[in-house]
Length: 252
Image (cartoon, rainbow, N blue to C red; front, top):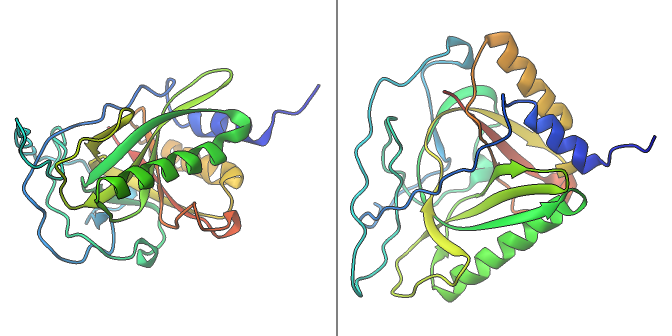
């Protein structure tokens, strides 16, 4: 019997975290005024509760502002975080300066992103992700928007041949141009989630995901049907051995 290729084992191990196949992530679109200047060394604010507290958020979030009409400037969008407390995130900062984590409970803060959906077969997973990110950065350059922060990969579904995903790159600035077909203004995920840091190659993430599954079982925590990888090191220019990836596991 032939061995399952490493990319297949990787995705199967990841999907073991979820009770069902991953449901499509719904990009959320809204518009808001320019974000305040400042330093956001990290995407998330540490939560006072640890992962083993099983703390849940009691707040509700404000609705996002209505999108502009006509020929008005396209401002960076923010997400309607759906019944979780959020706050504005200062822009800038170096994601590599964020401390590593394994199971810390934190609040993911929504930031404006330029997004593109993609599909890859199992063998070309990492290369396809990198190629999609390159397309987003090129479109962002055309729109004269400035990248700001680490890229996100949201895995949305899988089949026998490969997987679907959405790549998102945070940005600052405003533009009068509309994104080309296949690109969308959206917002990064928001809400309480456990953060797990992986260092090393993309194809060597199986042990990290296995430990995540073990922690969720041990703490009797229930995750949403979604998981997110945040590439703190730029996968376009970083060797796989030096990759730093935060895996976010949103909680129900």
